[in-house]
Image (cartoon, rainbow, N blue to C red; front, side):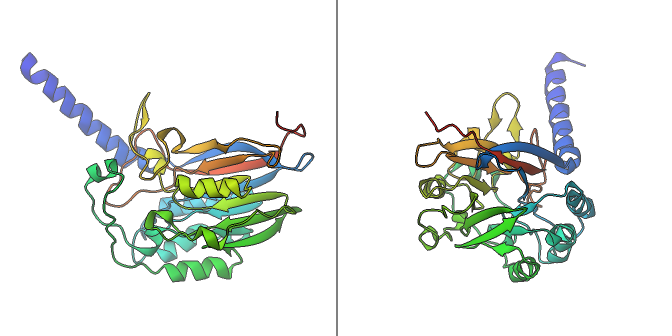
Length: 307
């Protein structure tokens, strides 16, 4: 083979192999992450929270449905779902099949754009523009999903607050609708987070800084979000190319500090962004960012006041 053709051929072969891996292997390499979050009062027993996000379920994804259902074997104390569950008009039964064992546990949720609207093909270069126009697909049967989840006792935290006592731990929640569609109404939940609660948790789909800052200012100890897919296609030694929202690339997935501890709020605010369990059916690829759920173990914070 001539040198003039060997290099282009090798590049094409490498590209084809990467696409095949990203679409056929990594996209279904479902992974469980684990993090400890020190947000409970000193001396508290741990509390296990399963965080799900961005299932983007289609009717035929039986493997994903079985994997998600199997997470019930972890015996979490609480399940939190931060939206984008659906990817088709016929996806609600499969989504509920996946969630069925988990719906027997205490839970809370917010919905998001891909619960309300079906995905559509998009030019991937648009994700590099922060002001690209949002294009909605056909309306999805999100009310059926919402009613089924709420009917089993999960808290619907769409622009509202709520409380649960789980394993002896009193949890105060606040949630907003999807900021990606400008549906959030933070003023509806604004104000100091419940000081009588053992832990205060905020829920939002898209981790927009303007919303995260308000959760932090109101004294929430932990905020759970999704939306970013962790970047979905990550470059080794560089990370995510885009976040598809206002958050920085360094905090596009996993557990990070959002606000530092203070004397008034000794926990500060932690942020966990799930890289999610799915993709749009029109972009069925993941690279260096496998689909995931996360088991967060909430632990007791240090009894010493912040310096």
